[in-house]
Image (cartoon, rainbow, N blue to C red; front, side, top):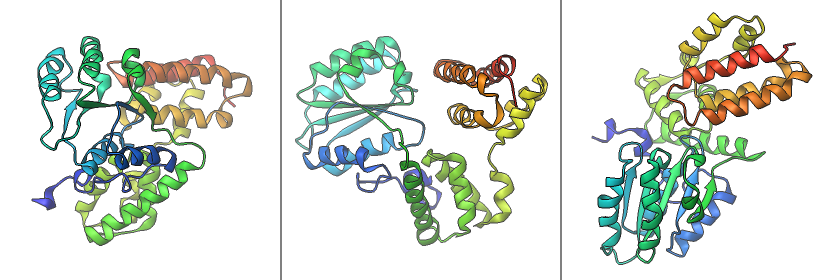
Length: 311
């Protein structure tokens, strides 16, 4: 059975210490564990950075009863009124406080969030709530004010350190636990492509492991999206190629917008850079609400193409 298990679950950290996070983020979580007391938390950041993992690790390490709700599946008022209230109102079998982890809480309906506002206070003596989300602006302000908000953002110097720590973790998983042949430079390329989405990296490695070994023969499959190509299409005002390019590439909009931002000084004339930054910020914000992210990305590129001068 274990050989068919998803690696993201098989190798999910069970303690706070095992989680790959900067010390400034990890230390408060470790203090909660040391004191066996978890406050109401709102954990926000990109996909796969460890929000749900740290929440579960704290509960596992303390040994408290906890329940996980997937906000993208159970996002209505009935979940709050019946499932969460019934759980939070009963006493813990372990004798301590209970914890409700609401994953992807940014998918909860406004009405469900409004009801949670009262539930947090009503069961404060018995139960703590941990919300995880990608877009904190989709969480109503009354929930913000009832939680300690922790942003999973990496500051200067932390990205390289976290990527290095994850590289060592991957080496251990592939070499010592799964006994799969691999080449370091291929693993580096996979991490570079998807960092800081650790979940995506593990999923991709498990997929590539089916070939028997992870070597340079796979490099052609994992090459990063070429920003220079899309910049070329924008410079040439080639809408058709822009649309085809976006449709044919596996794009994470948040990561893609950042890569465009990082390329501005090399591709756009200085007087156009402020306008490009404002456009990127606008569409990155809209990405949290749109039904079709592909259309949103194409619209962003078209506006940059129309309003900016290229070098």
